Image (cartoon, rainbow, N blue to C red; front, side, top):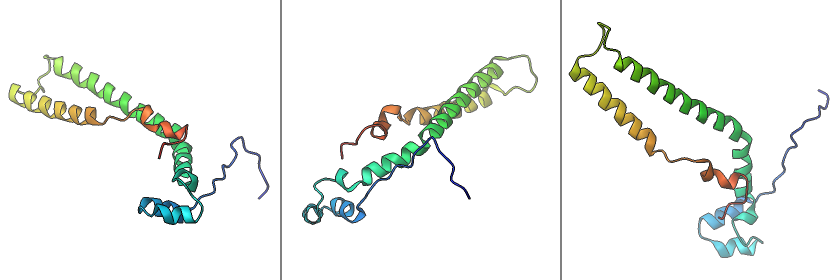
Length: 128
């Protein structure tokens, strides 16, 4: 295979998993003895950020698509629920049950508090 030019350069990140594990295990002096003062110096946080960044655009696109699908579903269900002309409608008690289940699922989705600001260390150093 020949060499092909790429617009995206491969990022090289030097890491020390051993020193990072010392920090995680609370063996700070051991990590310092081998030359690392902080977790960031081990390169592991930067590697994690770089790995997240490689898929960030597609994950953001998928999240937006999911949100659009939920909004579309909500609009369709609302139109369906408001239409009183069809014979195939739910009885009042069935409708109440379905609405309660839908409301419960919406509340579950609202509890997921994930925003782009949660991913700030993808674009700038994390404060670990």
